[in-house]
Amino acid sequence: MRRIGAIAAIIGLGLGLAALLVFRPWQEESESPRLVDRLPTDDVIGTTDILQLASDLLPAVYRNQLAFRDFVTPEFILSQGKTNGLDLQQSVFFFGSQSKSEIDNWGMMIHVSDSSKILSGIRRFEKVTKIKDSSLFNQNIFICPEYNLTIGYGDNWMLVADRKSFKKYFDHAVHARKKSIYPRWRKFIQDRQYADKSLRLSIISKDLQKYGVNSALFAASADSTSLTLHARVSNNDTIPFQLRPNTHRFERSEYTRRLINLNLDVDLKGKKDHPLYLLLKKIANKISFPLDDFFDTWDGELLFRQGGLQTIVEPYIVSELDENFNVTEVTKYKRKRISGFALQLSMNENRRQFLNQLYGKGILTREENKVRMLYFPPMNVRSQDDDLFFYTSSFQPATIPDSTQSILWDFNYTPVVFTIDSLQAKTAYGKVNIGLRKIVKDNIKSK
Image 1: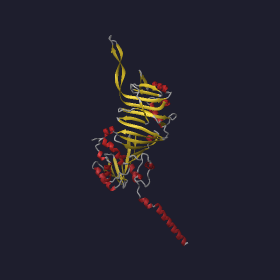
Image 2: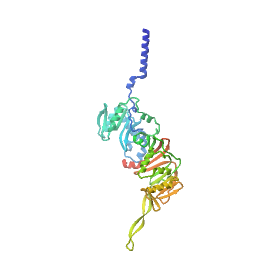
Image 3: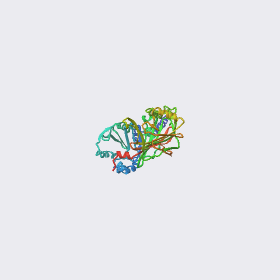
Image 4: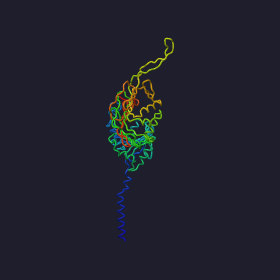
């Protein structure tokens, strides 16, 4: 019996030792969470290689002779990071949310290479603006009222966030556990779409859900004149249109402010609960536009151009006294400069019936031998094959072949181009190109 007991004790001791070697409970307690474990989640999450981003923006910075250009070079940013204990060669993570156009919450987390340098860096920052020392969750924090931000840090991480949201973000960062990264962050980091871009962000929000968008992924690139946002938009429902391979567009001039060239196979019939249909219906109802009849008539191609100045001759009636001092009405003509306008629509055999509806609703009105559409100036109208043309110029504007599907829209003299690159069943790929000249001129000091 003693021998059996001894053998059992030895086996039990061996199993216990094996369990200790496998599970290593002492190591779990000593290992601190990674920075990615501390990342809070929100509507918007993203990451940036700040040194590559600075390099991408340099051509625009120098082209516009910005006063602070020497302080945004990758070399300067890297040296400042090292001086203040930050590892800016690793990704910077950011997160936040917004309602309508206002940013409600924002924050960022930065890798720390030497936490002993952080406090001295904050004291240097204190020479520029007032900083209030405080504590939260037994950790030192630093509040900057002027810039509405708060700073907190640990051995290998730093959190910077707006004052209102800081407590929520800091709570998660301080109390995070090893390998507790949010699934959404893990999926985002592992997603290789646009992995070569210097800035990537993902949006999942209730505002997008209202329009049937499940999620949107954006990435940024830049050159000396513009910023480009590459986009992948994932929808809850099947996208109700497909791109046709060939289309045309009106020629773009220096003064073109708006330009649309689309050629689509649209299938919204019988899909009146689709978010895109509901959005278009809401817009159409404002002017009593017969949307359903439009989709029954439109064959998928839409070309539009607005911009530049054109001179038209417009009649007007005045009252004059004739030689017998009788009041008579006299038609006179005046030259008027207007914004150029051209519209081309491909339509099927229902075209005449649809146009009669527009006349009946007052969306189209006749003025002598021309037609006026809502607030646009009087236009010529012409049918050619399956196409219907409206234009303010004396001659029908020519079109040129173009395979891109895009919309150019001028916002306060800043050109923004929306392009659809490709479509899958529920996913759209495209980009948004934003001109920088006017934005820089109005908001940033040059020298």
